[in-house]
Length: 185
Image (cartoon, rainbow, N blue to C red; front, side, top):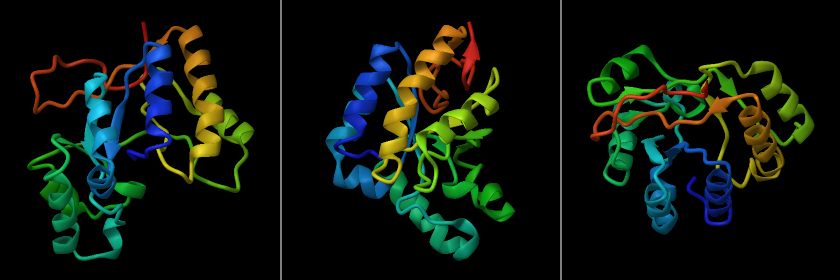
């Protein structure tokens, strides 16, 4: 994301549950939909760089990859970076961590997989999420069906279990350090 028909829905849902999120944005999406990007920030969420065009780092040269990340950084004001697909070379980590705080995750919702039902996405999340988890959902057309079915369940269930949903802090800003994942109160 951001994605016009999906981002506003996510933002409203997060507000309903008093949850905050970290949106790792694609530069091409921010460029195409700047209003949604600004709304994410206006509502108190944090953004991170997810490259300009969602490249898999292992399939292209470092030079091309870093140009794509730099292109996105001109649109996304953040010191946070998440590798698309979790795919990278060690040399890319070494280079990018000079300017970014690299964020990985431990729970990928798999909401983007059209072969998965929302029921299987939900079961996966129930089995995988633990205190301190960083769970990834996708703000995209591909994930829309599963994400819209599962994210409300996720927020409701884990809130009832006593979890809180803080943002991953962008250390380039004057934001106090917080727990950088889902955690219990």
